[in-house]
Each structure stands twice: as structure tokens, then as C-alpha cells.
Image (cartoon, rainbow, N blue to C red; front, side, top):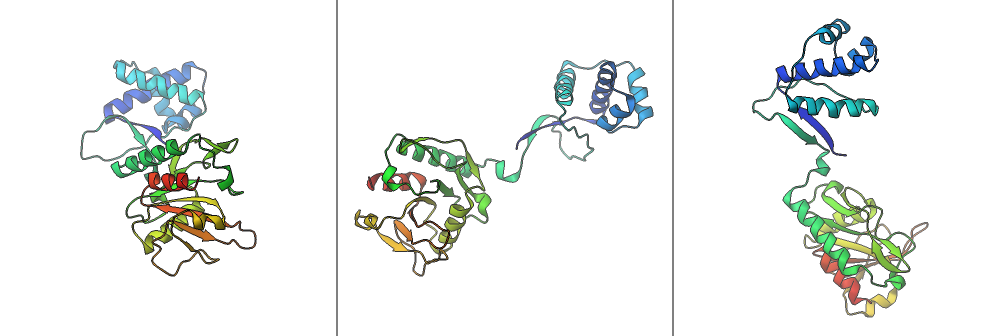
Length: 256
């Protein structure tokens, strides 16, 4: 989840705390509670409340934003850090998996284009019991966080590809884990989509092979489709492979 991060120099940080202390006190909060919110001692809060404050419009804007969040019971953190560059202002902070590099942006574009190739197509006879999804990897993935998929899968309506929620990295663990394994054998495999297990898919002009029960393969995995016969509690499935998400989508369309 991406959060706001406000970075201020020391003087502005003190002024901001003074404004917040005065405003919170005027709203009826006790000094002890204000001290907890602003990470101050209670005597310092008392000093800030009685002081005269004159701040810039920019600091006032930050104060208003922070007060709104405090009133909404949001957690607030005031921390001291050491910086060797001037980078004051409003920033954003996020988990590493949420930071979009150029490669991740391209992955999102490819998955989006693939979805629109499939949107509105009737693929009812290819649907497994589980949700279908299409996942796409970075060229050199290290973990599941390097693999993107549609959050909650591809949404179907009357057997037709209808919509998607969002694209996120590190989700769809089964498909992402399988893709991570297949890429260790064949680096040209970057995308995979799950369909129902159907022997007739072998007659659709695409090359195929079988996965073992524990999802392993013995050869170089240069195939269009991998078939898995399932196991106890595991539904049989077919997996369409490709170099890109759009390539996988076009292979799925060829099966229609």
C-alpha cells in the first residue's frame, strides 16, 4: 500500500508540530494525548500551545492534511533521519514490490493488452473449475514478487471474458510458482495462463507435453501447452505458455 511521506527540514518540522499542537488542543484533546500523537513531551506540548506561530501556506496545507488524517484515526509517525541531499516536500513510500520500474510498467502494459485481446470472447468450454488467470514475469525473476498477475483472476460473465480488478506483483502463487520453475528451464517462457484439462487441445495445432503430478517436466519445456492430470484435491488443468502475455492470449484465441 502506497502512503504519503512528508519530508521537512528541522525548522519547518518544529513549526508544523507547533501548529498541530495548537489545533489539536483547540479541538479539545488533552495535552498528554497530543504528546503521544506528535511524539513530544507534555511540557513541550504546553510550550508549543502557548507559542506564537507564523507559517507558510505550504506548511499550513500539510497541517490541514495531517489534521484530517488524525481525525480519521490514522496512525501518525514523526521520525528523525539524516539526509545528504535536499529532498524536502511530499513524497510517497511503498513496499519494494509496488515500485514500478520501466520493466514493470511494460509488464503491466503487456498484461493489459492481452486482456483486451480476450475481452468479450466466449471461452466457456476452456474454463476450469478454479479461477483463470494470466501471469507474466520479469526477464530475470528471483522471487514471486517479480511476477505479475490479475488480482482475483480474470472475471467471467456468461462464459465471456468480462473484466479485471487490477494488476499486482507477488499474487497468484500457484501460477507464479509454476512459471518461476519453468523459466529456470527455458528463459523464453515469460507468461502462462491456466485452462481446463482437455485432451482435444492436443489437436489444435499447438505443441504440448505433460507435467508430472508434482508439476515437474523432464525436457526443455519448449511447448505451447502443458497438461497436468491433477491429483487428489487438485483439479486437472492445461497451461498455455508464451514469451509474452499477448502471445499467450493469441494462443488461447487459436484454441477457439
